[in-house]
Length: 287
Image (cartoon, rainbow, N blue to C red; front, side, top):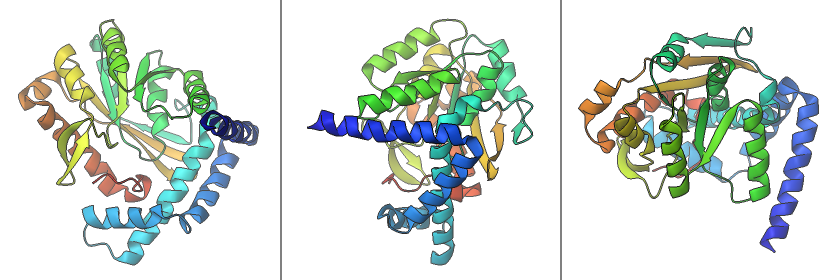
């Protein structure tokens, strides 16, 4: 029965993919943004999101929190609508995309054997890797695979089409990452704001959370710099991608433990979420 359910889900996702690929990046983004904003009025997760927001960012009225969360739903919907067309988007020399401090991305890639990247579910996070692949560099992203194998295959196809390799989370994925980082030009990226029950205990907005520590392990083992990257939606399908100053191996080593490294990286993510609370996905039971 489960396989039949997964196949039906896949058929719907495939139909969605073809329709919105035909409609193009801007139109599909607009439509799904409006659909998800309406969906937010009926979703039980809206109350979870409003509560999460109130827990970690103080001094915001309930009315303001609601406004932020409905904007969040719209941004998330836009990301869904943009997925089928990600391979059509070029971020270099694109009037709709501002890239800030690209030297923070390119200089480490040129000067080090390997680099590590992290981002969070902000704006359209998928675009953070485009500047790297468009400049001829390779990157593999660690990701949590959907339970539905058919849907997973489609999402992998979408990401492969714009030059990103994918490594599934888990023991087998960890071995793949080591293989990638053992070669020149093998770079790894990951989103570090997800809950991981098998992670380590860290602080996120001064609350205890479980966080995957792979990026800390790899940085210590392979002596890689870590580059923070964020993509913010300025309006509609206009974006700003910013690459922050690389975190050197010297700094990583001085932090000494995986827990301290992840707390340090979490602070970077917190800074961006506080600045753009309507662009982070608040709907998960992160705390």
